[in-house]
Image (tube, rainbow, N blue to C red):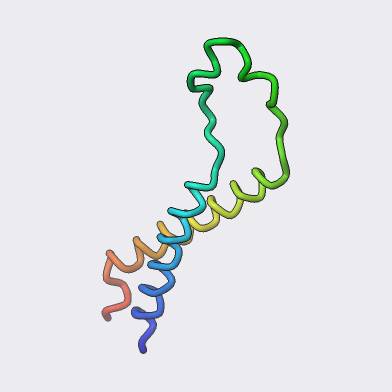
Length: 77
């Protein structure tokens, strides 16, 4: 296995992890609950949501960086 294949494996794992993490996020919109004014009852910032955001941003940065490296062909030289 060369370095390019290792990066492709990390890239795939980060893509799948991003999909699951984004699906775990709580919705930010009010939806139909905003009509009755009940959406503001439970607006507390939780540490779990903050941690989830940090992990998502880190994984998305890794995903984008590896995408640029692999698509630019810098490893083929």
